[in-house]
Length: 534
Image (cartoon, rainbow, N blue to C red):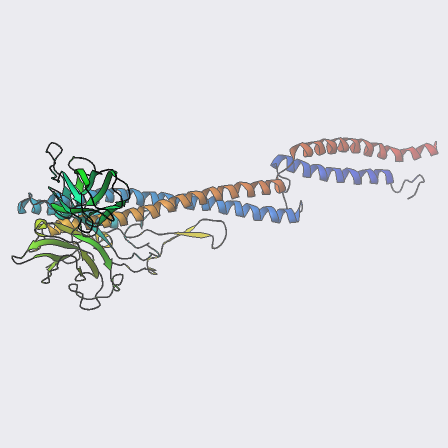
């Protein structure tokens, strides 16, 4: 660089102007940043930072919209659940009407009026299913059911009468219990004497007590299948179950001959002298139906006329009624099947009667084990409710609603709404006026069980929708969290550090003022050459 005095080129002024221009450009950038609040206002400010910030802004906008999508889906699910709550109320009302109609106190005219109301309520169930919508999208007609899992066939003993032979009652507590026993018996080796107890109640447990005189040894006391042996005299007791009103007992000794006496003999029932029901056997055989089981075809949807299972027929919705009857020559169980799906001739009465303690498989692929019923049980009944299998359905033409729940391609979740019309609930043919030859209210009885199954299905659907609402809420929280975090990341890249930039702005302003002053001085420096010509 030249150090001489030059008038052709003002080097000082040029250097000062260059620095002043650079400061002015930096000052302009600083003013732009401070006025916009952004560190990056153009690609020139930070090319890579601008690209990253733009991508982050896209993600934030996507998550914000996804949150709105999820909220809309939640609102739709809430609308569906509200409609299902109304349907639940309708089914509960129909069930109450069926219970009313199941009583023979209700006349045929009463049942006809009840059926009129039931039919109207069923129409309302269908209307809710068809008309419930959100933003023009129907929800409960099955058009957005999506995949529906298989519903296995199942059976339930809805009611089961206790047989009269199930209990034996001791005399009431205010009635003297008279069990007669001998005052004493002698024991004779080789020929044990017998004593007789009378006034017993069969099936009741008693305690036989008495005293064996001192000096007796190697003695034995026997009542029925119960026994007690010992080698010394004194008080003795033995519990036994009476097999009838009269029972014999034996007392004897071995190896000795003499007056060995069992005296002070009494027999008292266990539990004292109070009236109580005492089982006479295990629970098996104490009910009209002691067990039910499904055969190999139970969980199938094989088509075929229902009735006697002579072929591979599928299980149908229905009720099996078992009634103990007196044929005049025997006591037997009569089976009747009522088909919930049939609109005409729904009842099938079995011409084959069942004996006590037997097993039959006549209707709906159900094996029934009967109890040990007797003449005192005539009129006792049992009801077995059967629900048929429903195969899984993928519903390709009725796909679940696809909700874009995230910011990226394919970030979706499906929300399905099963159909809840009377066909799906399997209650479209409920008719409390229907009956069988032996049960005038069998149609109403079947309706009660069918509505119970429909309510359970409806509650399952509501539980599915409720779980979807919970999941959507969690998804919305996740979207909001992601948006907040991404916004923070974008802010750290594009937002301005105002404090730092203000300091820089003040510095540039000061440099600009100084540069202007220096430039003015540099211009004056060239004029000093004129002094050489004076």
